[in-house]
Amino acid sequence: MKKKLLLSYSVLTLIFIINITSSFAILTPLVDSIPMSDGRKLAADVYIPTGITQGPVILIQTPYNRTLYRFGLPLGIGLNINTSNYIIVVVDWRGFYGSAAANYAGAPSLGTDGYNCVEWIAQQTWSNGMIGTWGPSALGRVQFQTAEKNPPHLTCICPLVAAPQYDYTEYFPHGCLRTEYVEQLDGLGFGMSPLLMAHPVHDFTWSFVENANNYPDSIRVPCFMIGGWYDHTIEFMLPFFASIRTNSPINVRDKHRLLMGPWVHGGHGTAQVGSAFQGQLSYPNAVDWDDSLALRFFDFHLRSIANGWDTSPFVTYYQMGENVWQSSATYPPAGPVNTDFYFHIGGLMNNYAPTLNGDSMSYVYNPNFPSPTIGGPTLRSDLEQGPFDQVDSVENQNGILVFSTDTLTQNAVMKGSATVHLKIASNKKDTDFDVRLTDVYPDGRSMLVNDGVMRMRFRYGNTTADTALMTPGLIYDCDIELPNSSITFLTGHKIRVDVSSSNYPRFNRNMNTGGPMYPGNSLDSLVNPENAYNTIYVNHTNTSYVTLPLVGYAQGVDQLTMDNGEWIIYPNPATNELGIRNYELGIKKIEIVNLLGQTIKELKMENEKLTIDISGFAKGIYFMKVMDGNKMCAKKFVKQ
Image: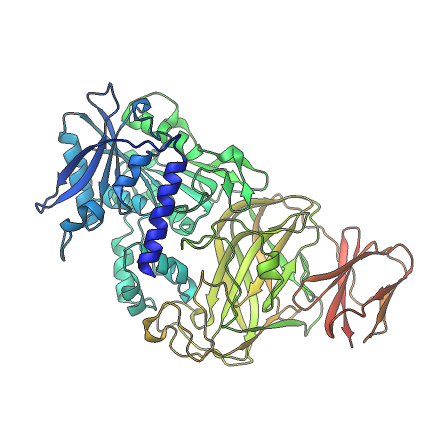
């Protein structure tokens, strides 16, 4: 499996690099080796544009094979090296590809190797001593490690979709292993699963690792961080950027910049940082902003060009939905107000808390048939990345509840992190709750914005002392904070929250037994799994809702009084036909939804009475949702 994933990732990366070039030509670099402090050498390719006898250098350190860059260099250079204003040096990490032989137990750190690479470059005749670094993901993290060692000739760094932290929640968000992420890391040769499986709960080892890899005060050079709203590193990038803006040396704090675009992590497939197509959506006005601004950053710091970079906004971010670029001093910017959208019986979601007691909605979670991962912040090379429609493969399947607003009559401008607050119960001692936030288009597509998970034994925290199994049947709080985003839910769209107990293989499948989570230290094993009957409470006493940080949102959608006698449904229960009578309110639209919140039938009401054929409905409980202009409410009925 590991070799297959590694081969797949490398081949797809190669295909992507080739595709951005105009032909199958290949660059011919100066091949060299860079001596390290321990006497070993790292393999390096040096690309020197014709006409540059001595100039600034951009260093790229990679674990993914430096020779792939011979098919096309980044930053828009491609095969046109002679059009570049920079010398490019690409180095294989110690222990990888051309530098495999340099590795041994107790070898110097990647940061130390980065220090040695920078200082070796500074001594070469073709270098003028102005050196920057560039690269995404692992190539970005190593830039922070290099900067932390403070090489004298390092001038600036440009990490993409990366932060330096090694944090428990990166691998175990709310205690649940990110299965596909760790599988891909293993496949790429990082071999992290043995360590992770030895520490599935936050312990002293994690505290040590986290403290050792969070060093904003050690970033002494200007840093331009580039990220994407569909990337999995958001919740580490944003805090670290805020930290270097306040904790790095005073003389450099105001030189840091952040760019957040509508992009995925990349690494395989056609969706990359800076590409137009991201999942099933397209953002043509965001194409190559990463490259153009990175070059502007390098031009200012490495070539001393007065291009106004020093007066540019600290944060430039893309507001999805409206599809415009905006700027602020921080992210999230000032202004959003936390706005609650309550879940109601039948899958309704609005700004009004339920008025009745006793309502709840339930589903069965079978670990053998989990809710599938469709898009999102994935990494494994056989999975799609970015925004994908959730309707067919996720929302129309069993084991999920769907809550939606009515069609929006105003824009809902979200900037920041949403939190889903659930009141839950289960018949098992442990289970998971997974949520997905989506943007529902007028044509019915439910496009994923982001997602989150809670393994219920970790509801109080991530340490051993925090963990606690549930008592079957008792009601518990389950609060799931979602990653930051910047999206406008447009007028005519709907906001939706999907609730299930799996999102696989993005997250590990809970076996619902309350026993060991990873038998045999397997990343994804099911040993005698049990079905869980999970309940979400949506009533006056136990409310479930989502909190969205919205800008300028006017809460004013009226709610019809429940059971006020102004409209009735009959007979109830019903067998073949269901009648509705509207006395006063002029109901214009009717939707019938099932227990999962899925719309089964839509009708218009033009007269006082309406008869609805329900003979084809499966037996069970349904809800009739009625709307009068911007007013709405629902009633329950039973199909016999």
